Amino acid sequence: MKAMILAGGLSTRLYPLTKQVPKPLVPVAGVPNAEHVVNYLKSFGFDEIAINVHYLADAIVAALGDGSRFGVRLEYSYEPELLGSAGAVKKLESFFAGETFVVVGCDDLTDLPLDNLLTFHRQRGAIATIGLVKCEEVDQYGVVVLDDRGKIVGFQEKPAKGTERSKLANTGIYAFSPEIFAHIPARTFYDFGKQVFPGLQSAGERFYGYDARGAYWSDIGTPAEYRRASSDVVRGTFAIPGTRGNGIDASAAIGERVSIEGPVWIGPRASIGDGVTIVGPSVVGSDVTVGPGARLERTILWEGANVGARAELSCTVVGKEYRVEDGAVLQDVLVANEEVLT
Image 1 (tube, one colour):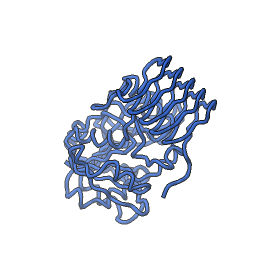
Image 2 (tube, helix red, strand yellow; image 1 turned 180 degrees about the horizontal axis):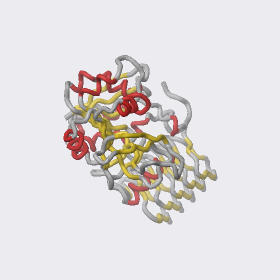
Image 3 (cartoon, rainbow, N blue to C red; image 1 turned 135 degrees about the horizontal axis):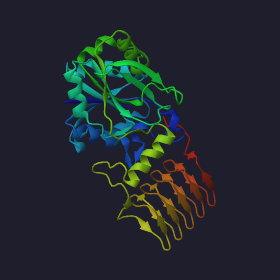
Image 4 (tube, rainbow, N blue to C red; image 1 turned 90 degrees about the vertical axis):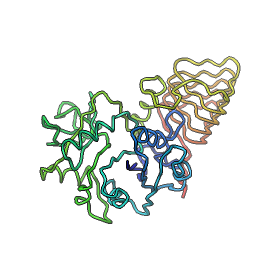
């Protein structure tokens, strides 16, 4: 079966973290989220997967390769100029070869059942079906309104609290029949949310929403959701198959008088100095160095980060190979090397 991962965006909402690390390689529990997405697709039988790439494309290809280590075949669609979510899919029309297929975002962390989504889609003879999850607070999401058969009858984008017409959020996980390509112009920037979906709904097309109530979903493309997803994995609220959720890698070096409180993930070859305190949920990535006497609380350190002696970090995300100076105090911030790589 065939699927596509949308991975072409710049992820400006996570700046400066994503200036040197493309969105698909943002780590969750020390592993690029795109790897989690590939494994998720593979678990439902999708073994031919296309990925559109734009910013730092070579880094993405180097990280994921041809897909053989995941047991799938990966095909890359290079976009010198971004085509939008729908335009990116249109460019790969020949790849899908007349099959029904699914589309998932590289920033989706989820266990939404794709087999049930496809069954629902096929039973209704749908052109397009959106995977939906119920959220208590939907003011940061696109909301979808359904009739009693699951047909989409309306949308709200980030409705103010108390004005929402539904608690069902658009996950960005879609099932499409080949007919969808007739609704997307070729070689044009075109967006599902802003153009294709409103057109389908207003025309009364066979356009449905699958209520995956009870499924886990997070869009890690915002700081708040990225922190939530990382916390959920480390605390065990959400388990990623094949991924260690917490604990200390055997190759990590832990100094004397180190205090670890609550759930913490410590990666390969990490070095934790004497007298360090780590309060979970926290993530210490691979090859990270934490100097003596430092304190980390609800903090995420990406690969190769270096935290100086006696530094105090709280609710902070530190980017790849970034250096936090001795004695620095950081609270509720994102910090990273900001030189944009080309």
